[in-house]
Amino acid sequence: MSTYAPRPGSAPWTRKVLAHSRMEFRLLIRNGEQLLLALVIPLGLLLLLGGTGLGSRLPLGDGPAIDQAVPRVLALAILSSSFTSLAIATGFERRYGVIKRLGASPLSRTGLLAGKIGAVLVVQVIQLAVLIGTGFALGWNPAGGVDAVVGVVLVVLCGTAAFASLGLLMAGVLRAEATLAAANLLYLLLLVGGAVLTPVDEYPAGMQGVVRVLPSAALANGLANSTIEGVIPWAAALSLALWAAVLGYLVSRTFRWD
Amino acid sequence: MEIDNLVVRYGEKAAVDGLSLTVAAGTVTSVLGPNGAGKTTTVESCEGFRRPDSGRVRVLGLDPIADHDELMPRIGVMLQEGGAWSGVRAIEMLRYVATLHTHPLDIPALVERLDLGSCGRTPYRRLSGGQKQRLSFALAIIGRPEIAFLDEPTTGLDPHGRREIWQLIRDLRDDGVTVVLTTHAMDEAEQLSDQVHVVSAGKVIASGTPDSLTEHHTKSLEDVFLELTAPKREAR
Image (cartoon, rainbow over all chains, first blue to last red; front, top):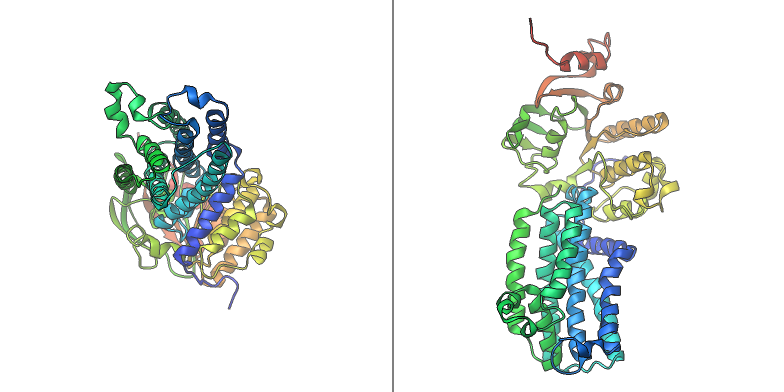
C-alpha cells in the first residue's frame, strides 16, 4: 500500500471520548488559573470556614460549622469545575478554532460533550478527595450510611449536568472574553446570592422564593441534606435534573462547530 | 464532490450566489478568487460548517450537514489559522487527532516528512507561523482521508517549505487522495492543479485546466486571474 492511500475510519466512540477527556484533563492541570478555581479557592475557603472559627460567626446553618462548611464548599467546587472552568475553557477553544478543528474530525458532537464531561468528572473526583480529606482532618462528622453516599453522588451528577449545560450554553452564544467575564461574575453572584454558602432560610423573606429555585441552592442544600441528615435529597436532585434538561435542550439548539 | 447552485447568505448579503462546480476523485482542484469572493464559505459548506440557504452540496455522496458524523472521518480539513489549544504540544495534538481515527498515518514518519521533530514538545502558542502551518497540514492528513481540504497551505512558509508541501500534495494525489485547495498563490495553483475554478462574487466565473486557462502557458495564471476578476468600470 502506498504511504498516503486513503484508509479513513472513525475510532470507536469510547476511545474517542477517553482520548478527549484525557486531553482536556492534561491541559487543565497545566493551567494555573483553572487549578486556582477548581482547587485553591474551595480549599482556602474550607480552611477559613472550618479551621479558623470564622464559620461559627457566619450564617452557615445550625450545628457545628465544619459540618455545614464541607457540603457547601463541595457545592462551590462542583460549581467551579462544571460551570466556570468549563465555560471559560470552551469559550477560548472556540476562539482558537479548536471547536472548529474538532468539528472536522471524527469526534462528533456527543463525543465532544461526553469527553468534556468526562474531564470535569475526573477533576471533581480529585476535588472531592482533597476537600473531604481536609474536612475529616478539620473534624467533619458527616451522617453515614448508603443513603448519604447515594445522595451525594446523585446530587453531584445532576448538578454537574445542570452547570455544565449552563457553561456550554454560555460558551456557545457569547464571545470568549464575554464568557470569561460572565462566568466569573455568575460564579461570584451565585456564591453570595445563590445559597451556596448560606442556607436559603437565612436570606430575606422576599428573596427566598427566587433563591430556592436556583440550581446553586439545590446543589448546596442537596449536599448539606445528604451529609447532615443522611437522606437522599430527591427534591434537590429533581430540581437539578430539570435545570439540566432545559439547559441541555438550549445547548443542543445553540451549539455550533465554528 | 458536487456543488449545485449553492446559495449561502449572511443576513441580506449572499456570500455564495448560485455556485456550481464538481471535483473529480483523485485530482488536485484549486478554488481561486479575490478576498470576499465566497471561496471559504463554499469550502466550509462542503465541510459542514455552513448550512446552504439553497442548492445542493454532496461530498463523497453525503450531505455535509445531515451526514456530518459519517462524512467527517473520511475528509481532512486544514484550517487557515488556529485549530489547536494554546498550551498543547505539537506532537501531543497530532497523537490526539490520530487517536480519533482507525488507521492513522505513521506519526514519526509524518513528523519527519513535515519537519516537526524539532518543535514536537513546544506548546502551540510558541510555534512559528511556518511550524503552525505544517502542524495544521499534518492534522488534515493524519487520518488518511479520501478528500483533503487545504486552505492556503503554504502561507507563511519559506521557499523550501513551500516546495516540500507542494511535493507532499502531489504525493497525496498520486496515492489517490482528492485535494481541494484554496489559495491566493497563483504559481501554487498553476504548479499543482489538475483543475482550477475561479470564483468571483459568489459564482464560478471560469473553470479549466491550468493549460487551457493560460492558453497553453502563453499567459501566466496570475494574468488570467487579474483579467477575470478586475473590477468592472462603468462605460462613460
